[in-house]
Length: 248
Image 1 (tube, one colour):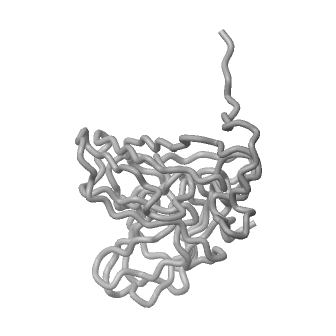
Image 2 (spheres, one colour):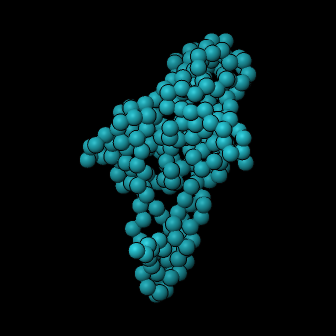
Image 3 (cartoon, helix red, strand yellow):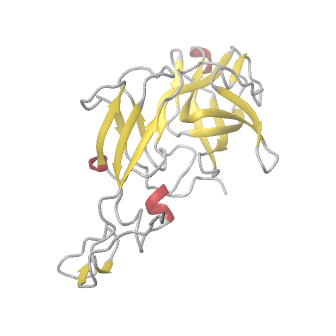
């Protein structure tokens, strides 16, 4: 049975979408023939594991570089390029758990996103008990500190879940379903950070935090509309997956 994967376009009539000076849409990207692709929506379907405070770094005083150790819902793997990493169940931001004694310490987390792009984030130590990052990591290769922590800390996972495609604006999210409930979940959503990525910028594709804790059983389903910058003849990698991560 034949399968058809190409996008469908509506006819060959000139539309001047995005190139007509009287109708400069800009995004979607310019199309001068037809109005396709039509009806594209990405269905992000995931069942994240429960967060764990110490499944990247066990409780320890860190003097320069932390010793990474896999725990519940994380796995120690060796990448194809030979780099040893802690791989998480899904892309998600990390947490630093400690006490007030580490408020002046910067933790630099280095690793990779879901697509293998190298990235890093600088997270300031928590003022009370836990500090949460903004970037969604899939693999962590190292964690260094700007000064000795003096008190023991742990590094683990959060419920800040990284989107698999770029969310250019929150209006592109059609629905956030969670825990087998039909109504929209009161999730906290952040759109993609489109500025040049650094150690302190947000996630390049955007994040979603469901209204109640993940537990390995609750399913989250997010519908994300895709503009022509993400699909179609004028699509770009940045249009689909966001700006490049901050490390080559």
